Length: 99
Image 1 (tube, rainbow, N blue to C red):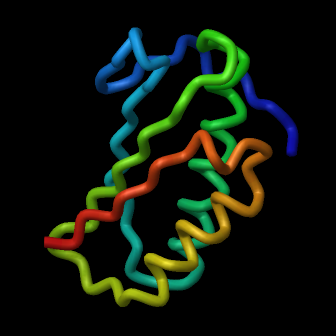
Image 2 (image 1 turned 135 degrees about the vertical axis):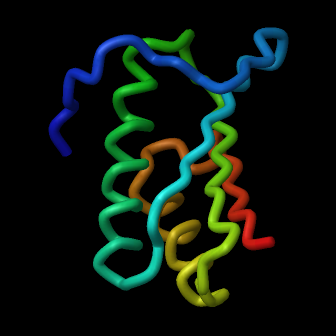
Image 3 (image 1 turned 180 degrees about the vertical axis):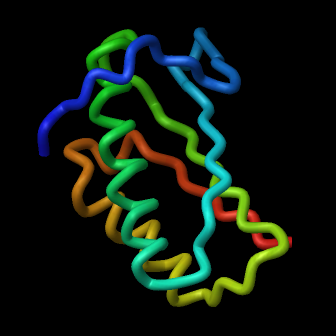
């Protein structure tokens, strides 16, 4: 995947002592196409972050899906796909907040 130039990395929070960086996404997940777009976007962002953060960062990802009808299968797809496509899956923590 091509690394896009999105400029500076701005995590919502950081725990420097643990090399953890927190990112929150609030995307429309109302269709399979929108779920796939979110997966591609987050993966692109993760790869971009890795070029701007200290070496071997731990990414704590929160996806805010409150108020949306999203089933467990879509949540599992997001998590499974991100972890399978990101080169350091052990450095990902993914939570999807549904309520």
